[in-house]
Amino acid sequence: MPAGLFAGATIAALFSAPFSTYGPSVIVNPPPDKIVIEIATVNGSGCPQGTAAVAVSPDNTAFTVTYSDYLAQVGVGSKPTDARKNCQLNLIVHVPQGFTYAIASADYRGYAQLENGATSSEKASYYFQGQSQTVPSIHNFKGSYADNWQATDKVDVAALVWSPCGEQRNFNINTELRVNAGTSDPTKTTSYMTMDSTDGDLNTVYHLAWKECPK
Image (cartoon, rainbow, N blue to C red; front, side):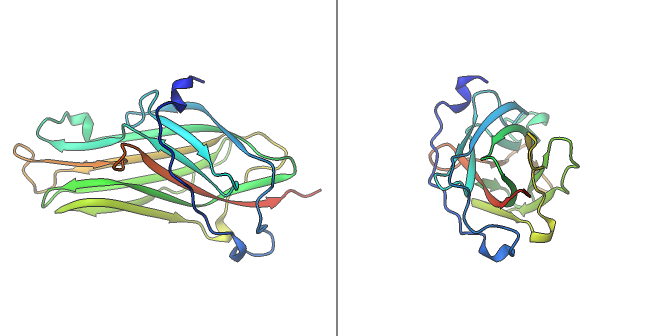
């Protein structure tokens, strides 16, 4: 794994509420031992090598994926391939023995500048190695728009997909940004959508639910 994947990224503080509302099968407190997440592979036009990094919150309730070059755009100065950018992360998640985890929610943030008539979308799906991919969640935006954006995916407790107990299954995250000129004039204007914040990085936070494996 190239060391550059973890270089130059500013990781924001992580915040997450306990998952006490998820029922008796899901523990309130995460395991005390530290979890470790490594990037096995990173592919896609939205995350060139060296522009994605992962950090785990100190309390093991969330992890953050940070991007520094994730931008889709149409219009002046754009190539046709710039309208859609995507990223697939394959993560190795080392969890304490006797526990399993699921993704309970995910927070996405960025900035969009959309001309009147233009549209954009953010799409994401997740799955464990060897399991079926989740149905993608899609969040749509339309111009005129010039502001930060945020989208949250939440999973009902009955729909949580748990990592198989006692097995090492890599976790895959697929994301996509797409911008469409719509009725705007792409020969005169530019519309774009980024996964960036003011410090040059986007922090996508994935909140974890935990439970003990059967003994």
